[in-house]
Length: 293
Ligand code: NAP
Image (cartoon, rainbow, N blue to C red; front, side, top):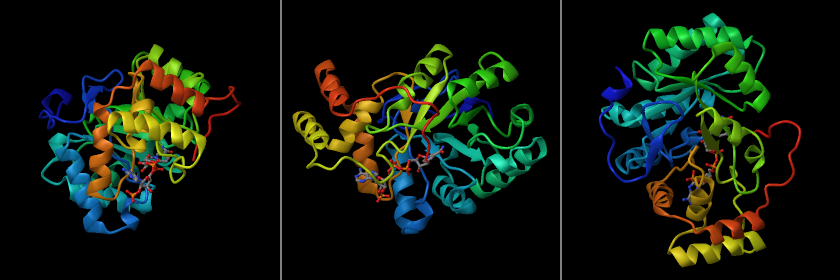
């Protein structure tokens, strides 16, 4: 299946081209870490409602629930595969030349599909990047993945990948990015924009540390939310996706949460509002090393 054969996803959530790919991917997507831990029926309904709303970007990994999250996603997208931009990740310890291919086959089986839209190295590990990239390229030749990318890669790592793979091979860098952790804005996002690499922001709500409404920052979000008839989480997502390279993948276990998150894509923040959020949640000074969960 070639990328352009994808059926147009339902309208709704705003989409953009994903890095160098000829694919329209929803700027608000759906994460799946720990999704298998809650009520299964609710999780499946949530993912399906997201796809209905046009949130075609679904992010999972072999790590999540040791494959249980991928199985859940496979069940949720059965019959809707063409409407989904499906991303999974290989664990660093599996990312040898042979191990990456085997891990990919396992993920495809759990996801009940014949291809991933994008396959990521979850973080840098013991295997040479040359071997992982060679496996990604082989999988791409076979049509088992349509593109590949990395996760938790700092600029020096991205440069190394570019030296090995050349040109426009890297589809995305999936990195930690939320209001209280804006480190990627210093160098990673600019590098990705310069090289047409998509930035996928993980844990956009801070995993489980969203700013409390009683804090000064929380009050800034609440005031802006009120002006837009929106929620503070929607304002946070609108802020994070203000740059054209950035996609967010909040994890939500209920239809209500998914619908709320989807609604963020319609919000356009004014420059003055962006400045207020920027001041309330400053990006801070550049630090050594990329933060990750
Ligand atoms: P997150 O998306 O920042 O936050 C998830 C939390 O927010 C959950 O407790 C969820 O609750 C809640 N939530 C979602 N929508 C809500 C809403 N509208 N109102 C109230 N609460 C809401 O955290 P995350 O799961 O860490 O990150 C998102 C995804 O990024 C992951 O699922 C995973 O796919 C990916 N990720 C990747 C890496 C990596 O190394 N590449 C690392 C971490 C995460 P409910 O579940 O009750 O809806």
